[in-house]
Image (cartoon, rainbow, N blue to C red; front, side):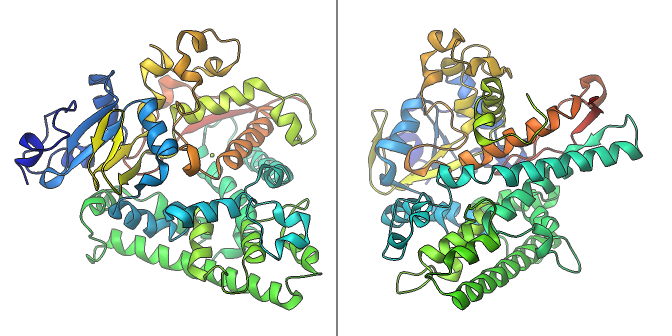
Length: 483
């Protein structure tokens, strides 16, 4: 177990930091790191030109860190279905997201993705042109702009009300932004306001916070749980996580059953338009209604667990009127700013794949079962891709006339930006998230001047977790702009 990686493994010739514990490898360093990106970024800086970097975990288990655009292309595109999620990764993501598109593999993934994008028509969907419009097809997402704008306006009003009670004081934007985003996702996935799901004890958003934004003890247990299943241990942090998960699942199941009853009362045929309009805005389709109408009956219908898994996954200024989709997309610097935000602050800190058979990546044979770690921030911060200023926030780099694109052509490669994945497994909510971000930025910037003073508030620290969360508050001053 301990000799094989050093003397027999076909991967022993890959660059390796060789500074881990003889039995635990790099495991303790990953658990103790300030953020999930710290060690992968250190490895990348040590071996800039290596497409793959090897390191070990508990018991000498070999892991591979992806460190090049070509390797990402091989894994996400050209050999996508030769890789699956490792069993441990399915377990920890399943605790949060359930079973759904995020954990589907092979032909099942192909079919479900086509359905979500409106490319898979069944006998019912041929009766209406609307049905060919998947919940995440761009045409449907465009129709959600009024929802984004309404929530952005409510966010702006909330900030304005806070300013009236504490003039010139900074506001912790984490909480207000999280609630606003959660409201948008609730409407887009379930077709209802998130407050509808509140329990007498806790708001629904607080239940999700206990799952996705845990206290330090909970984060530590989640990190250990990545390598060793420990959710069964009766500790408070474990109980809080499991109880919140149980409550969320129960509330979502009740919503699913209620929607099924509504649809069954009117049938899947002629009155479909009426029931869709009851739960949607501007003719768009929320995810839940879409799934039930596409495969709500018959032998191939979605199971309740499958629906629950898809819903839980969706767990990011030139005028006074709310902007349309065309207007949001006509602002090149806004688009560049949004891209730079997700480049410098990838919302997902890592993804893991493992080959189902011996597979060649960048001229290296990867044995079946080897865990391959894709840390988006490694690619997003790589100086051979983005230039020597790769770790500096600069939206100009995404503008068409920026000369860095000619000096560093890899930065224009579609696989260079790893924040949303790529290929057949690209995040299905990418367009949704970027459009929501743009809508909220437009609303805030045409109403407020934003200021964050480093000498007062310091830098932003992030938690060591599987998705990006700030460690502590982010304080911002909002100064209302005159009409």
